[in-house]
Image 1 (cartoon, rainbow, N blue to C red):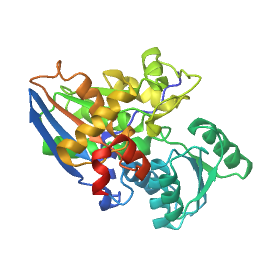
Image 2 (cartoon, rainbow, N blue to C red):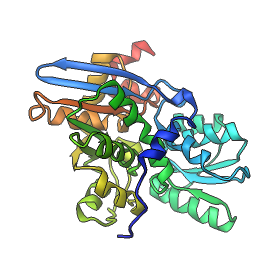
Image 3 (cartoon, rainbow, N blue to C red):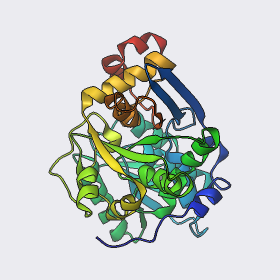
Length: 321
């Protein structure tokens, strides 16, 4: 495994002054019942309904101001974050997405000004197409999970958590490409080392969990989960490296546990959360017996669902739309 330069808490602090304030100081939810003491950062109320505006904002703040076009691949939320921030800077962006990508997210990326190319049966196939396109046209390819600044921008969530709740025994973080877990873990390891950092991956898409345990990038033949935002089968080596020092454990949750967490969020807070955004909560609920007497935290990190998905997964919420 190639060693990467470590993430920086100093950069995480500086990022807060450079990220669009619309993405900062997100709301906090809580739940205290049956021995579970839970604090939750809600990243679903900003213009793109996910945390991805943080990392992409800090990433662009660190680029040369040449307005050169960018290329990326996304299941939807990262593309929205990069599109939102690229548009603010007048920088062209092309996003490659799977032909099976969430149509709501595709529409949102286009609305934010990105050119969206549908190519590939899944996210990783779309990423390969994006890399080839960028190389052919000599454009910068932006890879979620491979840039330190993207992870550091995501880590600003942790700074807000420790300010609002100085004592946290454990935090459970959704694990897709790894930027969110690496950034949040970097902050907690430095500023609250007593806090156990647990990354939560989908059981049907375990490549990053396998990679962390093996200490090397380990691909899987497929990624089968309803949580498209964390449905990764080819890991990002840089993120695998950062996670070695950033997290203490990885747990896997199945789709039924993710659905239960989505319903828990709706029943208790009236929140509509997409599957990947509820993965951390799913990890907590799956292990709530062991977490009794602990103060635990997580992030609701995305809420981009189609009406059909809401009616299928959260039927009680349909009348509220």
